[in-house]
Image (cartoon, rainbow, N blue to C red):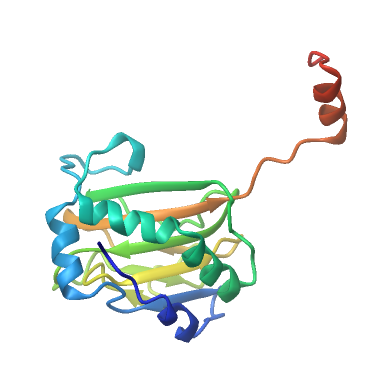
Length: 201
């Protein structure tokens, strides 16, 4: 079983430049990190893959369960002042990065909070480090740069200026992404039609 020290979320300083985020270095202890890497999904292509499409071992599954737990969700909700408990959750895993990736983006509009955790044991490269950016045009103007290693965790609230990206890197760059999603809004008229069993006109 993987045990996470959730008190570190409470202790993490909420940053506001250029958007709301926290960074926790080595959120996963070295022994747990080794176990997770042993049980990491056997991915062989550079793409994000939905968790439900993958097979993985017990330690990796234990980490996923810990992050999906109400306790973790409550800590993140409290930190960002947004209730994500019980909201739909997308989880994707990545093992390899390719040279065409890393463009500046803000994430999909329906995402509320995103949490990224990285699993490489070390990261000696200048490229491939996540940058939290102040604009949509300048990769060099960043507030913080996070190496994808040692169980480092990044969490941020998505908005129209939550720009992030990385200098392109090709190779193994292990990560998991948890994104809590805002439910689709249904109009009052659609709700009434649904309750009455009426077909959509």
